[in-house]
Image (cartoon, rainbow, N blue to C red; front, side, top):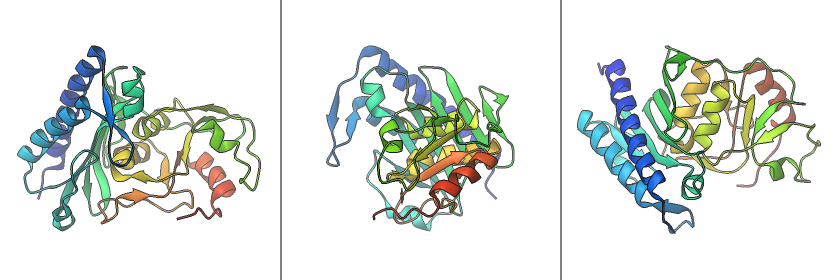
Amino acid sequence: MPDTAHDHATLCAAVREGGALALEHFNAGVKAWQKADDTPVTKADLAVDALLKERLLTARPDYGWLSEETEDDTTRLTTARQWIVDPIDGTRAFVKGRPHFAVVAALIENGRPICGAIYNPATDEFFEAQAGHGALLNNAPISVSTRAEVEGCRMLGAADMFRHPAWPRTWPPMDISTRNSIAYRGALVASGDFDAMLVMTWKNDWDIAAADLIVHEAGGHMTDHRGNGLTYNGADPRHRSVVAAGPALHAALHGRIGDIVLPG
């Protein structure tokens, strides 16, 4: 049987090293160009991706690999475990010199994350979790908030999304903030710094797998907006929506949005 504790230690060491490399590029100034899908990429994205791939696949060459910055190799679908990586989540913030990015990696088994780490080197916040062992921020245990009410909650999301006229019910006043990194948003919900996050646009495995585990190990829920659990390492790595919060607030949010049918 694979040694999950060893895999978790390997993952965390690689993510820390990747974060140090990302921070070097961040402090030196960053130039970006557009990929075919019109999203930005930098030399730092590619350098961190290469580092993580070398560290993780050298340690476990029989594991699958899925990364935002690597062409997908569908042989991952036949492996027992998979590394899922976003070398720099929040590249737009990274390019603009904002400290709202993270190096992200998760280990998947049977469609679910069993190890995960999210490292924001600009703020020196290292979030991690191993299934069944709780969630940590800089080696200290963390937990989601106990808030139950939507009104007044500290929400991570796009303010214009909540103002959109298509909502069947107007949202109550909330303290709305955002972060470019979706993974970092999830980590901040896990730590209780924010009460919830909501995304109603397509996201990928590498954006959310590590955060999913960390939120759950911190006592919260991360699902799609209809309340369905998220499964990873499928042929299509995309997810239509993401909501994360403590149990009571997650239920309240689901009561507002669970019946909405999104296009696509």
